[in-house]
Amino acid sequence: MTTHQAFDLSLGPAFFEQPVSRHLVHRAAVSEVMITGWRSLDDKTSILAAQWPRTHSFYRPVAGRHDPLLIAETIRQAGLVVSHAELDCPIGHQFLLWELSYEADLGDLTIGPGPTDLVLRFTRSEVRHRGRHLAGLRGHVDLYRDGELVGMGEGSFDCVSRAAYDRLRAATRPIRPPAPAPLPEPVTPELVGRDRPEDVVLAPAGLDDTWLLRVDPAHPVLFDHKVDHVPGMALMEAMRQATRLLAQPSPVTSPKLYASFNRYVELGDPALVHAHAEEPLPSGDVPVRVSVEQYGTTAATGLVFARPI
Image (tube, rainbow, N blue to C red; front, side, top):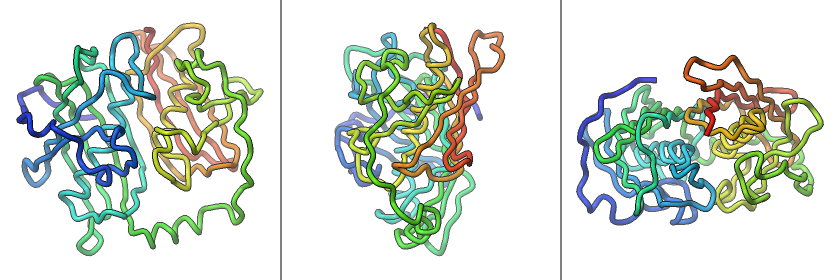
């Protein structure tokens, strides 16, 4: 991942006054919108403003610091804003996420006495158009707090019309939708850094270092709006929770996570989450390989770094 030098990209107070339209970031709840403004810097770069609350109903603080997975969600939203506001992607087009990553150990993410204002530099590459509309891109995002680089990440996605998406999903979805089934009992919430069972996305599978994916389409954050598959952010949370289970009894945080999405994970049908720890690095971080399998095929993979809290 490319590293950039820290420098001042300050934005005026007006950029932080209110969130952007929830439609720009594909959110139903205004409370889930992180981006508060944007402007174009040049033909490859955009500057965006974002604000994180001191706490969040799902992305909760870890040891007095912001949850690093907030970086991934903010990057995801930044890519949507740039696509819709600057690159002629119509509202209503569907996004196919291929990669999403974050690195959160670059600076101070300590929670202060008020919300945390961030300035994002979004650098786009591999931009593709279909006709006059955007067809996809790769974006690198640097996150600055008070002029200091505190995080970075990348995302890669395609965007297609609703009609094209419906054709794609018709070819990939099961012929018959699965009958609704009760959610399996979750693993103990405390083991995955949670205090509420409804925020746990893994269930015992009776296999070593393997768990059942457990997602509730009624979850107010992971399923902020109705979708026909398991969202990428829910899969990243499953990767993180699997890493925490593997590290037991030591509590860990995940300062870096790199995820790739190969195919949709369908709602209602069983999916397995496998985790394997590699040798610790000199820094003390432990790389963990995580995969999500459904129908005997790997649907998503992740490299998660576990660091003792």
